[in-house]
Amino acid sequence: MSKYFSINGYWKDDKSEFNDYIVKEYNDVEEDEQADDRIFEYGWNETDLKDAIKSGEESVMDFVITSYEEIKL
Image 1 (cartoon, rainbow, N blue to C red):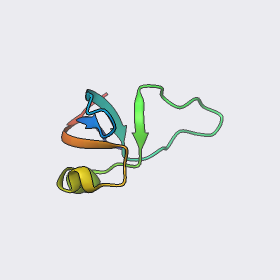
Image 2: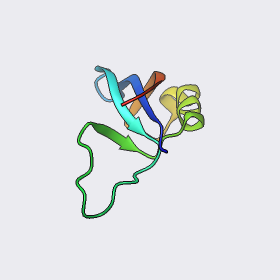
Image 3: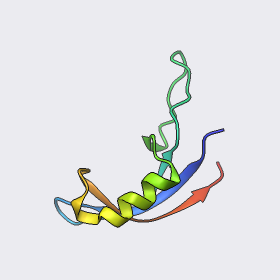
Image 4: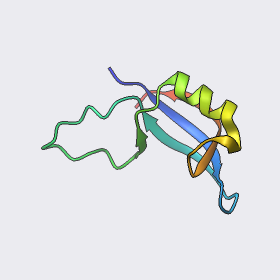
C-alpha cells in the first residue's frame, strides 16, 4: 500500500510558501480511474523527501521542501 505525506515548503521563483501539499509514493490508480485531485505529486517516498529537504535550493525542482509528515487518508 502506498504511503501519503503532507509536505511544506516554498516556490523558488517568488519564495511563496505552501503547506499541506499531499504527495504519494506510487501512482497506483488504474488507467480507467480518475487520479485523486488532492495529490500534488506522485513518486515520493520518505527517503526522497529527506533528500529533497537536505538538497534545499540545490534541487532541480521548482520548489523547496522544508518539512513533511506521513498522513493517513
